[in-house]
Amino acid sequence: MIKKDVIIIGAGPVGLFAVHQLGIKGLTAVVIDNLDKVGGQCIELYPDKPIYDIPAVPECTGEELTKKLSEQIRPFKTEFFLNERVDEVNQEKNHWFVKTNNNNKFIAPNIIIAGGVGSFEPRKLSLKDTDKFEGKSIFYSVKNKEQFKNKNISIFGGGDSALDWALELSKFSKINLIHRRNEFRGAPHTLSEIKKLEKEGKIFIKTPCQLDSIEGEKAIKSITIKFEDGKTEKISTDVILSFFGLVMKLGPIAEWGLNMNKKTIQVNAENFETNKKGIFAVGDICSYPGKLKLILSGFHEVALASVECFKRSRPNEKYKFEFTTSSKSIQSRLGKK
Amino acid sequence: MAKITYTDQLGNSKTIEIENGLSVMEGAIQNDIPGIEADCGGSMACATCHVYVEEKWLDKLPKAEEGEIDMIDMAFDPKKNSRLSCQLIVSDELDGLKVTTPEKQS
Image 1 (cartoon, each protein chain N blue to C red):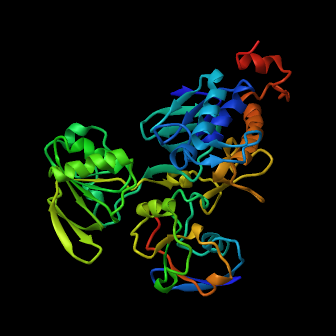
Image 2 (image 1 turned 45 degrees about the vertical axis):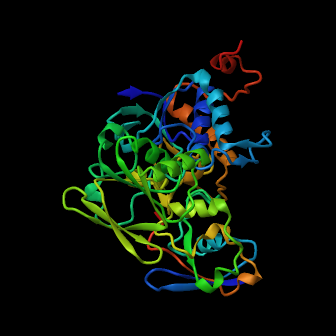
Image 3 (image 1 turned 180 degrees about the vertical axis):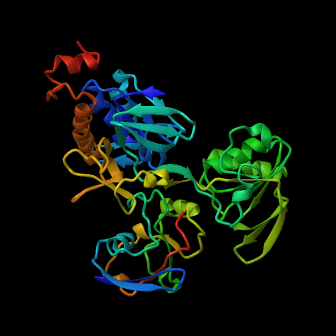
């Protein structure tokens, strides 16, 4: 059980800045995120796209913003739990108890939900009955490539993940690469490698077509794909790898007893607390009159929420507002002299 | 202003008058049209505002840019007439446009 002042759910820009606002007040935090890296939508959806409305930063990409924020919070040496999703939130007197899907347990008087639109999860195949094959014959990521040796593998998708794995797994397996249109959008170099392997008969490219059905009881035996002109083809398949990117799912957040408004959590605009004392929601996931889904709004929200976190964490101390330019205690927390 | 008709997979349809300059996605969100989620808020990054455009409108709409086509790869059940509604900006020329929402967005 890990004990902190605040449990931050979500490592997007607002979750990262929450670490800063708590840290300069002397509060400790831990951050949990379902992605394998920090940055949230900035890093997953638009790492290369320029952002123009961060105050005093005329232009930066999602990746640059993430890097800068990470650098800004480095002095606080905060521990991150990535690849983990918070499943349970329960109250224990004045504290909140949090459990993740990896069975890590945390306790704190405060939770800040900076969850964006929810946690990123792989986009699943749209056919019915694919669930029963998941993790056995259908995979949405490759964790251990050894298990894909000497198999008939059908890979779906047209982006870098699909192309990279087609290339890698073709070293020891037969690969069908299936995409809904003739153009792929991976790196040109990868694409030319794949075309070469197609000529050598190691990779079979099937376009423009989509998955029509899956045959097999316990394990997949074959799949049928349907071409744009209506023709179908049966392909002997042991494993399907599907790479259709990630979707955002609100997930268990909806079950924590918070007042919701569609997919957002209702908060007050004074300290961004939800209907549960000590649970705050900030950034894209919160709603209040006039809410704008901007990164800069999230920064403001978390600054105010952190004050209330302080009051709950240190009920016997008086909160004192301080500037970073003049406060000796803030400067020492930042490692400055 | 343009009248845009949104139809779902069950055939329920709603026609809404939408201001010029808004996207077909924003028109749907502001008028509580179900079936369009728009998780990323219109930054062409999620494919959850995917719609099927009535065939006769396909050539009249500004062509999809590469980023949009790439995102449509990710959409649920993409077809030839698939577009992301966040990229369809309403103008007088779009008056009468009919779009159908897919069975689901993700």
